[in-house]
Image (cartoon, rainbow, N blue to C red):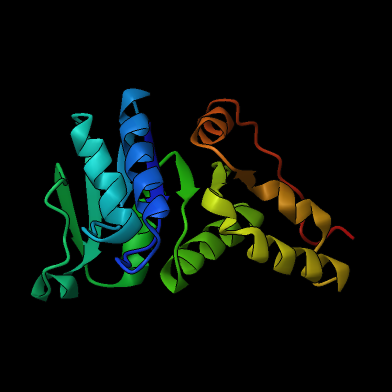
Length: 189
């Protein structure tokens, strides 16, 4: 089973995010999972791949658009490197070749990946688990924003059941291993 991990490529972030992400990559491999990620060597992405490599991961699939070839940003830890033409193709490959999605702290790209994945689930395009690893409470503000959307009736509370929010790596792996799809009808009011 491959887990797709989304996360930051920034090296400017607090060390706690790097340390917890690297440990998560190690744990992922020790639990028998393969890693699919954005192929970056920096930030959270790089940390997860370093942890997976440190644990002798057999499947560390980096997926990246061809235009990144010109930059020195790709992880050396990949057992396989998949090049796509566009960011959209990158996300599609990651979605098609993973059994679950783990969202670690990140920025615009990470939010894009999370919201696209949850939107596709909401529209019955997949039933895979989506799990937010809320390291250091990073996603608390985003959850407040989603709750405001519920309060303002832009979405229903049932939408929050499309993903799990976990504060520890142990909770993340429990959510993957004990996952039962909880779908809802977006248009049922």
